[in-house]
Length: 220
Image (tube, rainbow, N blue to C red):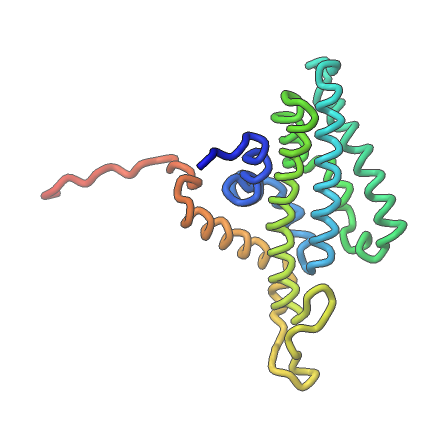
C-alpha cells in the first residue's frame, strides 16, 4: 500500500486529526457567536475559507519580497483587504445574513487561524501547497462550525436551513425548543463535547498534564 502524498496529507490532516478548532483551539470566538443557525455558520465558514485560501496564495507569492520587520503588517493588510471585499459582497447579495453575522466577518482579519496559517505555513511554502493547506484548514474549521450550527438550530428552533424539521408544540407537534441552544454557552458545551470525543478517539491529541501529583507511599 502506497503512502499518501505530502500534498494529500497537507489537505486532509486539518479536517479531523489536526483540526484547527478542536486540536489547536483556534477560531473559538466565531464558533461561539455565529452558530445560532446553519445558514449563518455556512456563510461564515465560506467567508473565512475564501479569505484564508486567497491570502495564503498571495502571501506565498510575495514571500521572498516581504521584509521580516514588517511581515505581520503586510499579512494583516492583505487579509483585511480580502475581508473588506467579502463583507461588501455579503452586504450586496446576502444582506440579512450579513446583518446576523454583524462584526464577525470583519473580525476575520484578526482570526488566529488566518494569521496563524499565513505566518507559519504560507510564508515558508510555495503557493500551491500553501493554498492546499489553507483549504484543508478552512474546511476543518467549516466542518466544526456547521456541525455546531446544525445542532443549535435543530434543538433550539426545531429547524435546519430555516425549514421546520421537528414539529413544535405551539403548532400541534411534540417538540419544545431548547432556548439554551440559542445562547453562546450552548456552543461552548457542544465544542467541549466535540473536543472530548475526538481526544477520546485519538488520545495522542490530549496535552500532557502541567503537573503530576506526588506518588503516595504505601503504609502512609
